[in-house]
Amino acid sequence: MAARTKARKRAVDVLYAADLRGDDPIETLRERVALANPPVPDHAVRLVEGVAAHAGRIDELIEEHARGWSLQRLPDVDRAILRMAVFELLWADDVPDAVVIDEAVELARSLSTDDSPAYVNGVLGAILDTEVPTSSS
Image 1 (cartoon, helix red, strand yellow):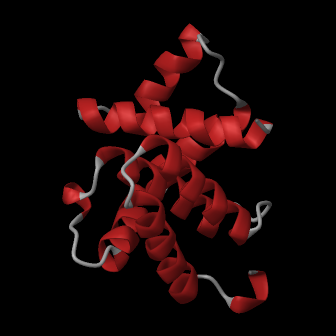
Image 2 (cartoon, helix red, strand yellow; image 1 turned 135 degrees about the horizontal axis):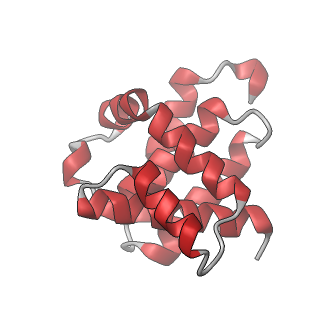
């Protein structure tokens, strides 16, 4: 498994745990970094910190594009995956959009329901179509 793929999974783990407990993702991240079991890659730290910094806008976009679902009705793991991927799509210029979406879909395939990969793909595709200038895709 590639380093960034592992980092994305670790970021989703942190975001998911924080969401389930109703905790601040940065605090959960600090706990995980301190434990270092397993170690938290730098890219995972960047992703969690980015999601926390842009949480309001990220959640607005997911809510806007999550056809028929409120943010709170989404499966917890899907919410974590979408938050991480939206941050990476919009604020991480060093990762191609197609890679972000493919990685998010794979995480949904391995961590969530049978319907989640297609749903995650659809939400991220809609966000990409409306929020990312075509010159940067």
